[in-house]
Image (cartoon, rainbow, N blue to C red; front, top):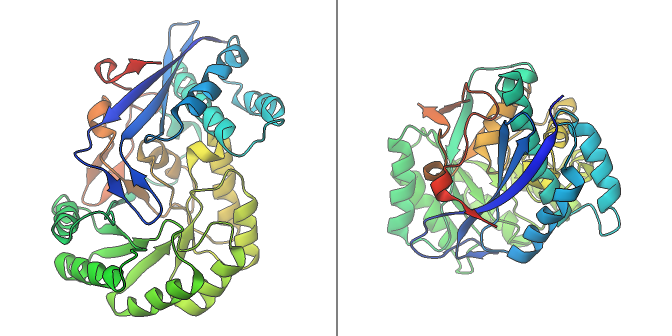
Length: 357
């Protein structure tokens, strides 16, 4: 069986004309770290993580430490790799940077193994559907009203049937005003969602939930700090809106606790933070056992193929940042995404977009 011969790491950057911000972050760069696994049979597998501009030395260091650990391993033995790396990384802690590094190598291993088999990843797990609903994401708090409306109406013109807007503005009444303008701009038949990026407390979140009820907001994402399980339970009972969360989690404990409290409507796993395809699928299975749909965070190039393989897929998030940097972006038609039919994840990064680390 093919073994890992070499690991390489690269940086890629998507153009950003000026910084953007949500309620808790100011983002100055759309940066990606790309992991490339080379096998002894000549096949390569790629993976990427969204790094923005944060802690470049930390993630690079964790990935560089992977080289000696991964070399010589059979590429199909992803479960063994997870088990062994969990033991290796336990001293400094599983949550955090180690999970990101594990996820990067795991995703690249799946890409290379599926290419070795000549199959797309989604065919290896069995298929539940042919396409996945896709929503347009963004709506940054730093946008002017004109920029916000241009973005959401642009999504609608491209065929998206749902758009998401950031909330949690420090200016009183601005969230409601922005959402009202968005609803007026996109009309009654487009789903509109809101995302606070953990930037609110329970009282203001309840007030906003009540204020936007006439706008028919589809879900309220990360309104509170992600560890406030009891707060989510209260907000779900009293707020009258579906709640979505999960992108900050490094394991399945928060999902279990939210389910126990009846505090979640949509589970949003982040493939890189959970650290593996295996953990992503385990989280989807736990959610399915409790009738919770899956709506992953950010990585549509991986999430669309994986959502094809689970019965409780709800939809995928779409940003365009990575599209100019890869060989085959996900195909979208009439609000639905279709997985690439090529082996592996169905795309690779353009060499011209990469700078080796």
